[in-house]
Length: 75
Image 1 (tube, rainbow, N blue to C red):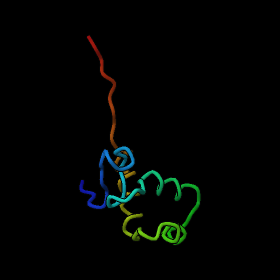
Image 2 (image 1 turned 30 degrees about the vertical axis):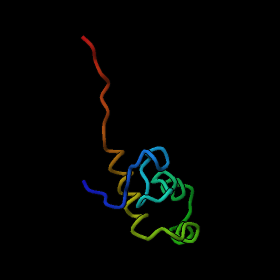
Image 3 (image 1 turned 180 degrees about the vertical axis):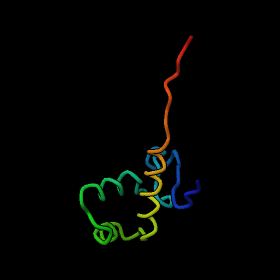
């Protein structure tokens, strides 16, 4: 799955997934939505964001939640 608005750069926010290279993480956006902030409020608080950034942050978070990590079993 492609997420062109999501960037990972070790020099920006410690490599956390960010929106378009900005210092705004996917986790920040998901947290704001989860705490009841609406899109307009988020866009006012972060004027560099675009509406599509919020959509992609949520889609990325949902995609990441679908990944499963299996414990390593040593014989």
